Image (cartoon, rainbow, N blue to C red; front, side):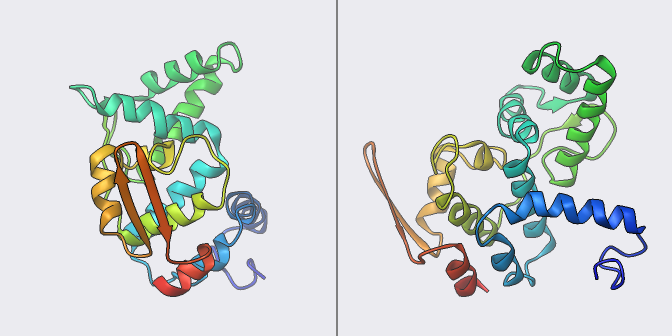
Length: 208
């Protein structure tokens, strides 16, 4: 069906099968994701870009660590940039003797390309400047309601998903206080979330 109806343009049958398998891994294992996204078809391109980045992070631990930790640390440097050699060294340090040097360079290139597509780094030649992408309320709501139904490392306030988008500390709290679909309060170390919807699909129905 996907090939016959040209969902992916003029891609070959083998390529369409590969893309469908990749999408299944990125979306099917997360309850309600596809149904919620069907309700958000009118979302602007930048919001779609952020949501794709988020789902790649969910399904790919290497990309999640690269964008949610490594690039976040480098963003705080005076020269907030990265290149292929730096990325390859990070892979080598994180996974010593796991892959050949050629594979490390290949992975580094793919990680940078994916981060560029997400608006996390510039798309120009190395060195690439590390960016903070624009995150709409729609994208932030989707991420929070998705994480609410998952077990993940960190908390709703501190995690690699939001950190990769520059949403940390006071800036994140400012966004949460005015975000529709939930109520956020903090008193000292006590944090309270009140959810307006029972799950991601219900939130998407209300947000559409």
